[in-house]
Amino acid sequence: MRESLKRFQETIMSKGLEGVVIASPEDLSSTNLRYLSGFTGSSAYLVVTPDRAWLLTDFRYLEQAATECPDFEIVKQDKQVVLSIAEICRNYRIGVLGFEADKVPYQMWHDWNGQVPVVWRPLGKLVEELRLVKNSEEVEIMRKAARVAGESLLEVLPSMVGLTEMDVALSLEMAMRRRGAGSLGFPTIVGSGERGALPHAHPTPRRIQPGDMVTIDFGAEVNGYRSDETVTVAIGTVSDQMRQIFDIVAEAQALGIEAAKPGATSHDVDTAVRSFIDRAGYGEAFGHGTGHGVGLDVHENPFAFSDPRSAEVLVPGMTLTVEPGIYLPGIGGVRLEDTLVITETGNERLTMVSKEFRTIEG
Image (cartoon, rainbow, N blue to C red; front, side):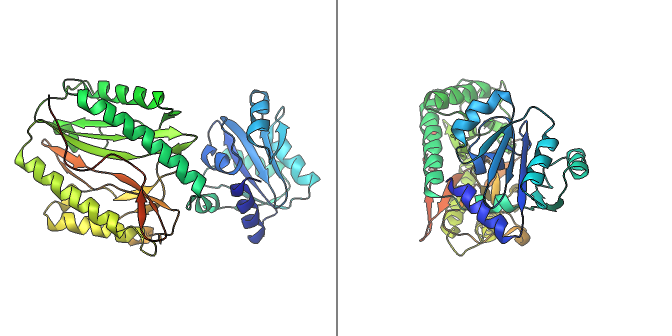
């Protein structure tokens, strides 16, 4: 049996739930649905009890679902899904049914509430909590995704002088696809010169030229799992100010990576990074969080923010990015990011490109 499904069934039993519905009509809750079932299609629903599991989908996905989801009874969806859910609940005497209140639109739930004879109970972040700790198989897939992305970047970097930001992003995507990426992990960010001051700079027709610092935030998707990495490189000779900023960011990142270990909190990691940048005089230029988890989503728990209320105690199997940045409007910016997996003794870097200062000659 799929490990994630078994753990979920044990969890809902311990919560006193007689069943749970996970909905994914055209990607409504596709990440959690995929995590529990392995289904990669775009439209399905799950009904899960402590000892049974059904996947409801339409004609397009019946054969695919049967192959991908051997632990589930596949139900052909040829009528309103609410009627199928109601039928399962009546036939199997499910009286209390959990649902993802933060994902199911009100109108859908309103229809369910009127036609499914159960007491509804919000799940909260039950599935996301299970996803927090990755098993060895998940980590290995993420390691492969990071390798696909990193090797692709190293292929693209030497020839990017004179290209547009859009050219670089396209070349990187093609290189990742050739190495086996199913898709981009997320839309690639390329910010050159003064555009490096934009933390989420979408690629533009601006050409990369000598004197620029170029920030590239990129990732690959492999078997549903994402990689996430950021490098900033120099094109020829850059200003003393930008080189100084790079060194500050690099040192801050090293401190954050050192702080990421079991028993510490995600807030501890943020504090290690943020306090160093503050002392260097650039606290106002670092306005985003220090990091986040990565997995089936590119942004998931735990989050390393300055607000201690977001703190999560780090345990082996969690993933966390460490990505400090300094952004100076009209001048440029630097960000460095690696994705880590927490181990029994500290952490392991999944991403592979060196974060040492790198110069690309034009």
